[in-house]
Amino acid sequence: MFHVSNLKKCLADPTLKVPLDKIQVDAKLNFMEEPVEILEREFKKLKHRRIAIVKVRWNSKRGPEFTWECEDQMKL
Image (cartoon, rainbow, N blue to C red):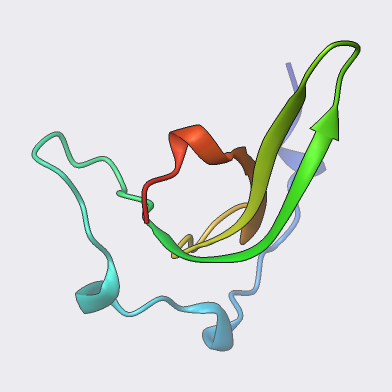
């Protein structure tokens, strides 16, 4: 529980607005994040094998813009 006196006024920053025409949603109104490009390739070395990973840039408007993904799962 909290008391109303704990609330603080929030001032919106107009520069952080995302244009609605650039947002893509699916039939269930979920935001669709799609890979834009592969920036780097690396190999992770485990005990007995190596895994190819890639640094992917996403069209995300929230969260990290770059993530490391397994190359086998990415089909650009």
